[in-house]
Image 1 (cartoon, helix red, strand yellow):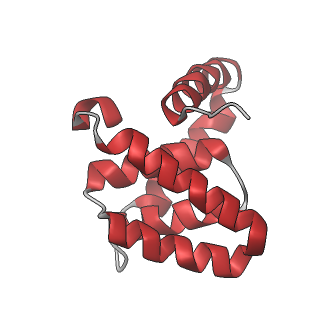
Image 2 (tube, one colour):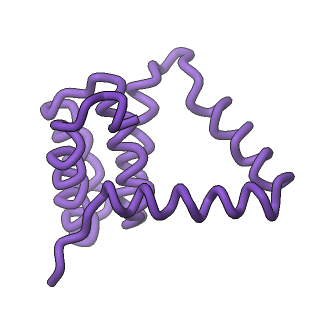
Length: 121
């Protein structure tokens, strides 16, 4: 099995999302507005919301979700311990398939943690 690169996954998906922005701008503007509003700090911090999003990405087995949200977590200063505790809840809620994607989230963390913050963003 070839190891996937979350840097490659997020870069490739970013290019594809740029195409969607150009070709279905109304839909993408609506999605971006929803994302900005949902992720805006409130009672829950931005870090808490990204941890939730990562857990959902793990449970849904979404490579792109894991990659983008782990990158955001790195930018927000997540600790490995915070990520691991979140992944424990995701595995509990999603069973075996979530365990496999929790391992993918750890791989994404390990891949992004050593990048300069500017490059992880």
